[in-house]
Structures are given as structure tokens and as C-alpha cells.
Image 1 (cartoon, rainbow, N blue to C red):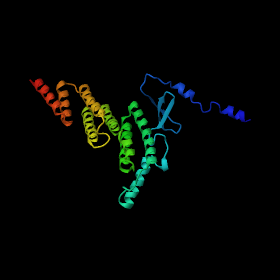
Image 2 (tube, one colour; image 1 turned 60 degrees about the vertical axis):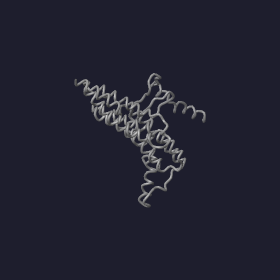
Image 3 (cartoon, rainbow, N blue to C red; image 1 turned 120 degrees about the vertical axis):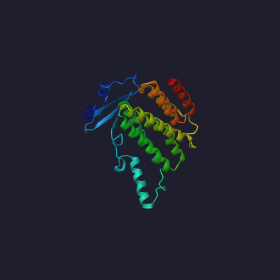
Image 4 (cartoon, rainbow, N blue to C red; image 1 turned 135 degrees about the vertical axis):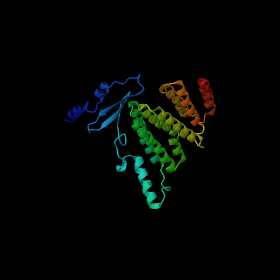
Length: 260
């Protein structure tokens, strides 16, 4: 009888039919889709070479509610809020190594999900999830008991700041609002540069995020600004806001020649 029961289970948990219905393509950077779930809510799926990663669109990506809260970060934030009300400060609250590891794993879930939202063109949700992970970094920085745990999170801050800026910019470009898009890039550049200027583990890192955003701003101006004069004026404004005064002087020379 036991072997008959085992035979009935054969194939029950095999997801091969699902994988075959969505073949993995090595030529694509990311394979992402939205699908309706059995609970009536939309799910986000990422196709990997060995399977499919499925996430909730709202709340914690894996759908779990640690301690009955939306996320582990929310749970810890509520503890510090209660301490602040009761004691006037939550500075005594400390995250140990295990707490930080659990928060890091949760942050990785949000990382995978915001990558999917970028691929799907859902920049509002991408902005939400990147901002959420930046909030996570701030919380760990305030409450982690070991500086090495803080550095584990802080090394990713410029990248997540850049992705948050990208989400805001792409959302503005959806509405063809070039001025807002360039403004968001300039604000993002300033914030990231300020992070690099602080004394800490980031001070010796190359500012690849800043370089990317500056190049992107130039591309946006060239692509979406119709006339040469308008393009130069936008480039001048962007250069001045980023305190690139040598570049600004060259652009002024080009404008003067154009006027003549």
C-alpha cells in the first residue's frame, strides 16, 4: 500500500510543465511577467535558468508577515517608536548580528522585486521599493551594534540611491517632463556625491553612479530638447547646478557663438 501512495505523489510537485510554458532565454537580460494569482492578486514572476521566482506586488515580496507586521523592518521600527514614546529615546535599542542578517535577507527580496518593476516599466513601485531599502539602511545605521554590520548595508547605498533616482526620472519621462527628469538627476547626483564625501568606507570607491547619472542627463537633454539653443541652455543649467563651472563656461561660449 505504501508504494502505491508514493506512486500517486510522483509528479505532484514537479513544476516542469510551468517551466516549459515559459522557456528560459539566455539572450535576454531579464525575463519578467505579471500573472494573476489564485488569491485574486497580481504576482510578479522572474524567470531564472533553473526555475521561477514569484513575488507579491504589495507588502513583503514573499507574502510573509513577520510578527504580524508588513515586514521585519516595520516590526523593528514599531519597537523603536514605542521606546521613543515610553523613554523619550530609542537610542538604547540595538540590532544584533542575527537581526541584521534577517533584515539583509528581507532587503534582497525587495531588491529582486524593484529590478522586476524596472523591467515591467512600473517606475512608481520601483521608486517605492528603492526608497524602502534606503530606509532600511538608515535604520541599520542608527541601531546596529557592530559597525561591520553597518558597512555591509552602506556599501550598497550609492547604487540604491541611483536606482531610486532612475525610477523618478523614468516616471517623469513617461509624462515627457524633461525638466523634472533633469532636475531629479541633478538632485540625485548631489545626494550621492554627499554620501561619497563623508568619511567612511565609501570615500575610496569610484563614483560610478555619479558618472552614469551625468551621462544620462546629457543624453536626455539631447534626445528630448528640440533645438540646439534649448539643448545648450538645458546643458548650461545642469552644469551650473552640478557646479561643473569649466563645462558651463564652454557651453556659454557655444551659446555666444550661436547668437552671433
